[in-house]
Image (cartoon, rainbow, N blue to C red):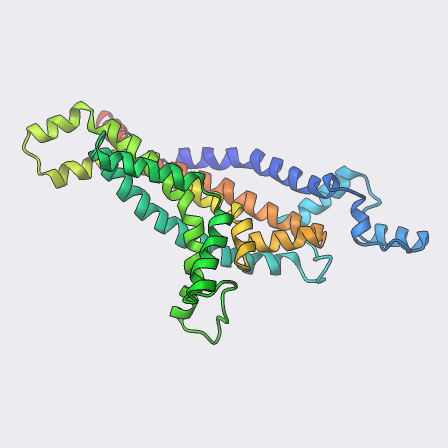
Amino acid sequence: MLLFVLKRLVYVLPIALGVSLICFALIYLAPGDPASALIPDNTPPAVAAQIRQAYGLDKPLPVQYLRWLGRVLTGDFGLSLSTRRPVISEVIPAMGNTFKLAGGAILLACICGIAFGTRAAYRSGRAADRLIGAAAIAGISVPQYWLGMVLVVLFSVNLGILPATGMGDIKSESLLAELRHLILPTIALTVVPAGLIARSVRSTVGEILGQEFVQTLHANGLPPSRVFLHIMKNAAPPALAVIGLEFARLLGGSILVETVFSWPGTGFLLNSAIFTRDLTVVQGTVLALAMFFVLTNVLVDVLQMLLDPRFKRARAASGAWQ
């Protein structure tokens, strides 16, 4: 087990290096010279040269990358070009807010997706299966930003029962008031992962129900609840893979929903930085999200191994052999 974890961490190193190269290149892939965001058009050439030298933009690209990578490894993502604040001080609070939103969305998606997917598998070919399958496809197909705008019009504008934007004043509002700000964006983010999880669980559980060991468990007189527990144990690893990927995707792919609801997360921060051409914030935010996505994949792989009954049997057999 420890060897597997160490191997996965070793594999992360070249991936992290590639991610850092892409994030560094973002500044140079953007239209215009990177220094144009720092230097006004009417700046004298001598002053422009001093600014380039101060930011190290006069150095060769490999030197600039190594210097930037060295700063990143110490937690220094640079300064925001618009606010002159450290990028890390803007990225960390934004990621915390996105964690709240994505965590609530993936929790609700897991509850709905696993419950409806399992129900559909047990009612395979019946009306419940077809209805849940159609609902899952509809959930996957609905644009999240469009659903967000519909929810705002319905519950905020017409009914006036839920706040439309922001997350409220955390210091002065109660926990219930904070949760009210989370309801609409959480629902908007839930539909796609819930549909994907439901389809994955329905497929996996349906396949397991047709295997011989399930019939053997029933033939041995095991209670239905115990049989169901064995089925879900075998269905957990594939479902966990989908859940982990969807959670990582929610952290990096909620930019439109956060913009619709003015939720101060990484998506909203990234959108604002793009429009203000704050390249250092774009660079730091993308790097943080990409690294979290990579680490989430590693965690999912480890959890899959721990939950997979085949791995447990293999480890037990290995111990018995020794």
